[in-house]
Length: 527
Image 1 (cartoon, rainbow, N blue to C red):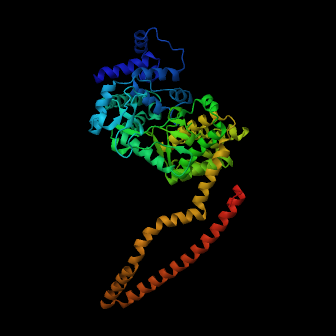
Image 2 (cartoon, rainbow, N blue to C red; image 1 turned 90 degrees about the vertical axis):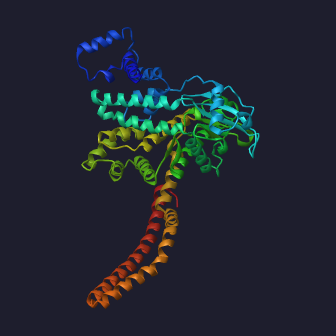
Image 3 (spheres, rainbow, N blue to C red; image 1 turned 120 degrees about the vertical axis):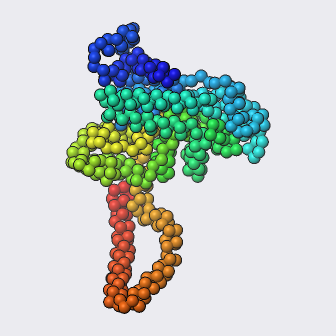
């Protein structure tokens, strides 16, 4: 069965004219002629990206998911292929509602009638991984609440494992026979997809992601995130608050409802940069199907986020890299951008900084002939990643995911308001991040983090001193007075150095705070 499926994949690729993938390792003319006879009548007038998209769609939902993931890897793929794969959509008919009911009952251990009122047997949405039904909770503190129930498709795991194994086989063949196989690292890409898909199959993980995002925005009016009802959730079933809104792509409908469209565009950018620079935790699948706008009078004009299967996270190091790259870019400080690559440790040690700086200048300089509102930050990051590939830079997956999400946000923002100046909207968040990192606020925040550790260490100091003196006493009893004297002298010298260090540190902190305020005032006009 697996061999048959593998041959079907190979035949499908050839049928759509992707011979360069399958046959590059077979230069013999006879083989190529045989392939053309086997696939007589095929049409090859379409661009290669479109042919690849059609091939993936014909191979089924797992391959569609794979193509969607590949579209985010613009550091590996040519732009024409990545743009075409981004058009892939899950177009899967729903599975039988009786099966869905049985799956829900088995996962939650209760009958559907005991859990939900008004359970809608016809699903409202269907995709390759799951489908969604509407209902109302029947009992408990949330009784009567409208909910959306997401249930995984039956038998997904065996199909998933089988197709992933086949993808691994194809990746090994591509790496061996395809001219670009090694450069594109197909086995690593399949391994990344394996993790990505298994994460998406765990609905408890998705529920936890949604819960965290809801908590992050609980104190603002920027974003609405549905509440998760944990008593009705499992690895295969997710029950969450039902949200009612208009898809962000239906701009004319929003305009007819008197939604402030330019404000909506600005707030969309604000939401994204708040997630990135404040939380380091961002919704990484912000296509129009997952973003809605509320028309309810109590929450009119607010964004609604749905589907939390793909979430990106950034460490402080990642945020530092990103913020300083963007700030350096807008100052045309290409040497700083190159040095950031070196300091990150992602560039091989043998790389000449001047050469990398020149390559980055060639990427960035053309953008400064345009108005800031016409500059795509996502495109800048993408070009930087593509240039970095030439220097064998290992681009981190979380930054690639961020770049893909930033492109989505830019597209949404400019669809809403073509005059949106993304840089002016994003600049306050970069400035705030810099203040929190290098200003006195950042120093105070880090001090609060370290204080608990100090509180555990300081009480141990008397015991440590007593142990040191006891050791000295034992040395004296052994007739080693000279050695004791030398030890005490060294301890005194160490203490003196420590005191001098404390004094210097105090002075340095004071001077640093003053210089930081001066720098912020001169650079950004803020204190």
